[in-house]
Figure 1 (cartoon, one colour):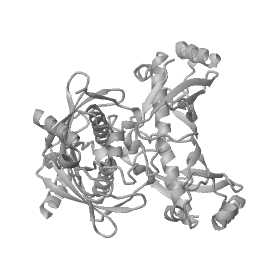
Figure 2 (cartoon, chains in turn brown, blue, purple, orange):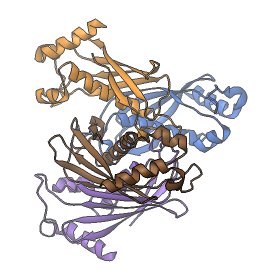
Figure 3 (tube, chains in turn red, cyan, green, purple):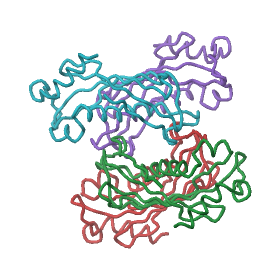
Figure 4 (tube, chains in turn yellow, blue, red, orange):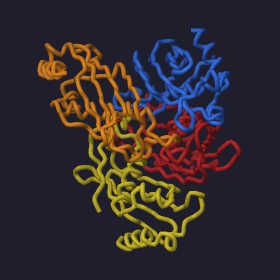
Length: 137
Length: 137
Length: 137
Length: 137
């Protein structure tokens, strides 16, 4: 799995001179979208199949501040998946390998009418790839 | 017309220690939505009537920087309206009356299928209020 | 303690038609700054005293989506404080009282040279008010 | 000069389903920073030399909406430079070459004490490269 890179933008800094903490939550989304693309389920495909995967929970531990022009490398992995709830982990490092943040997002899968989707039955291919990735952890 | 107030948020500052310039464009939207509400055309009503009013142009002159916790007072006025294009002007002042920014946004009116709406004919009430406000300038 | 109100801005929505989840993290900051002001420690005072209180962790559970123009009411309380780490809880409700999100932020206190501040000794007034609020829970 | 590419992020869309117009102002900054880097004056160098270049004006004409996952290609050029004020032009295109936005930003050059910098005398190298680029237009 390729690691996602985000370069800190000037508009992402705050008056402390560092990256505002809310941006890491946005970078998690960027990295997650890239992760889904890499496993063959980019947003366009999910949308076409009518699968929506809302964020039901996020948490983030800030370990080391970053600032403008720094590259942040975000590794995404499946923390837990048993068929319904998907828990993703994000490990964010700077250029020299220091951990800058560690975070988690929790997702469910619903269809366009807001009903839970039973992945194993309705989307076995997506179910299998997530299951495999969760076992690889 | 009541003047719109925006209090600068911490996350709107940047590493220069001042409000990032992109936020003024967002405040224009806040003030514009409030302005439309004050003239009897809040977003819900526009949406119900099927009128969409996209931003086709913005410009902003930055006169004096602002920073966290400052109140910015935004006066909106109709700069020009002849029936098709709506030009709004925004005058932004700080607490002591200094101008912090002067800006303009240009809008058109379309329906849900993206076709231009002829306000005079289809929405005479909105047409009249904008016409009156443009003449008051 | 007065409850903080945030009105969802248009630019805070996303293509799902709802408030983007990253904004709740920003609203936590808005509510936290207001909370500190209410207990007599607004940002200006903290800065003057040389106290910096970084966010070391955030987590947020999304219970019900919100959208443009909705008012969100955010109650902040001291979840835990034993002298070093401050844990704040945020309870976010919509106009009819439904919980839209429940979240937590964790903070430490450092001085301008990045060293931990011993609140009990150096800032007994702030220490006492946080201690009292933590016991009130 | 290499063209800057920005991929539209999910959090940059709004409830119209398109990129919120305020983001184009942020992309101008991204492209400008990249442009300065390409001409040998990245932010770190400007900062080291004590040159600050605030945005004094922006304007943007929105020609065609963009949305999540689209690539936007931004070409930056020196529109005008006579030694004091720098005017940059931005031409933004989508993948098939349609213009999505055309914009302009105006900048001045000040030192750390806020005084105008006389580029020709104090920073002839930066003066010359901007002069050359302005003549190339």
